[in-house]
Image 1 (cartoon, helix red, strand yellow):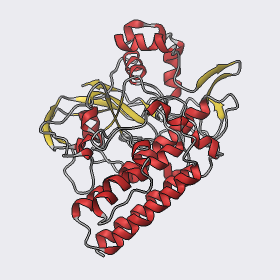
Image 2 (cartoon, one colour):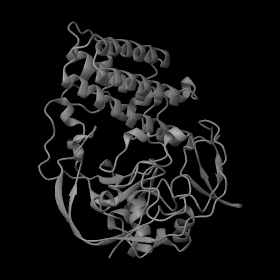
Image 3 (spheres, helix red, strand yellow):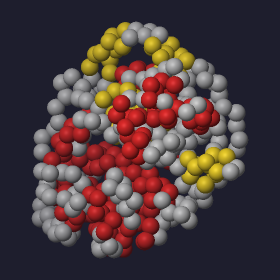
Image 4 (cartoon, one colour):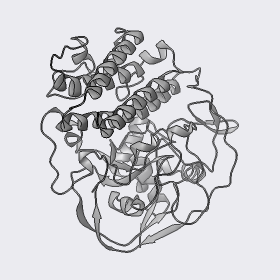
Length: 415
């Protein structure tokens, strides 16, 4: 076995174990429920990530492939039309069978077969590349597992805790500054080395006008001032679609905020706690982020601006490995803080293909390209993201009304 295959096998075991560790604090009942069509049960996440390796790795690489269970190909296919039909996404919470124990047995069987495949040597390079893709796919579902559980527990009147979180120390918020960047023709997109999704390329040149970028993410205290100034009721601050969304959804504050006699509270994965003004605002939609930016006499950055600012920054910050599972206040210091971790930062950019982009052949070509419509780009990762999953060129995307993810705001202005 080559050293590259050894490394891949070790990373495979670590990624799969991380998913199991995230599910460990939950009961079988917790793992079976689905709070809304956009979310999925934990049990489904655990099964689907195994389906990915069975379908795209084992089925192609094993000489005498046999499916673990013939129905799983249908039940746990997410959106790959080229593979076959899928069980309806809004109904995933109705799948009381297979049981959680049966799903875990499925995971163990897939892991055993993938380990044997990697151990035997001589695995084709394209198969190893799909294993690599599957590891990053698993990391995406690890974050979704946490955000979906938070949404599930947020709808429960008992406000159950995912697990106990240590209360963070109180700190002063770092003053907000704007850092300037000169205009110029810039190279954008992934150029290697290392893994990247296909939507991060091709590397291309684009002219970026001069701009300034906020030194940190917007805080709860800053966003609360927008709320208390009637920001949610002022149509001049909102995009038309956003104001219609706000009215239709009855939105008047970020998700998980609640106004009580004692002041504002927010839900975390550990508890309901008093809103801390120094922490980054989180669980806001693109519409809310854009309205807040207009209120602050600013705008959201483009993804090109964000990438240019982050290109030389180390991938350091508050990630899932730290166990905080909640955004932390920005550290004081020069330059830009919180570019990675804490909250995904909405950009004003549509999720669209880069010049020269073409999706790959076959079913895996459906991974990213077909979603390049009616989505907005987010950058930087969150407190629920694995650190090794992130880089400056990473393009996350969600519909503009989505806010159950750990999404926040960084302001920008024209220079």
